[in-house]
Image (cartoon, rainbow, N blue to C red; front, side):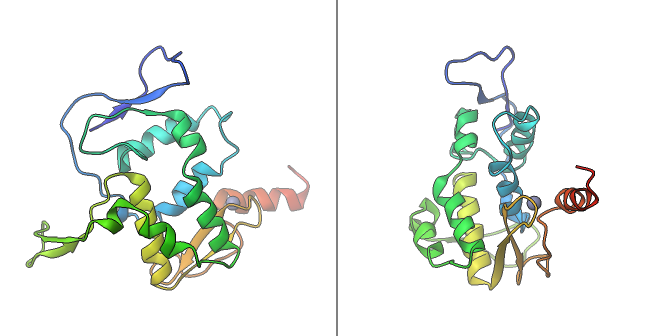
Length: 197
Ligand SMILES: [Zn+2]
């Protein structure tokens, strides 16, 4: 279900993402192999005070679904859910980037997707049915992605400029870590060296 920030705002406890009607559609968050990096950028960003943040979150939610809400039901989600995000996932990424990925299986095994065994079904364009994992929300999808990347041999590290964790290496399109999480951090570091910032 597509979502929006309602007109007016001013709700108790801050604005909510609400369904805006229209045809429900299925989200395919895991087609973005490094979605978890996109997510880390938002969660670890300078934060709540950033005025562009609601529009960034809205874009992400309409592309990949609500963080905790069920994509297949009518649900609303407060901005604060995204502000605090999921501590387990946030801490997990940070620890992995600091060299300790031991908690990945524990965090993944807590998810609903881990507790429901996968099923086989037909996918468009495939000749045979495939094994399907269907996370019920973006939060579970992200944990599934971390589990897949970690078990597949990917690496994580922290950005030298903003210290956000990011994933790279085996199983990702980003083969080499490099020092920065994004082109904007690379530019930021360059400006800092030049004494411009
Ligand atoms: Zn960075």
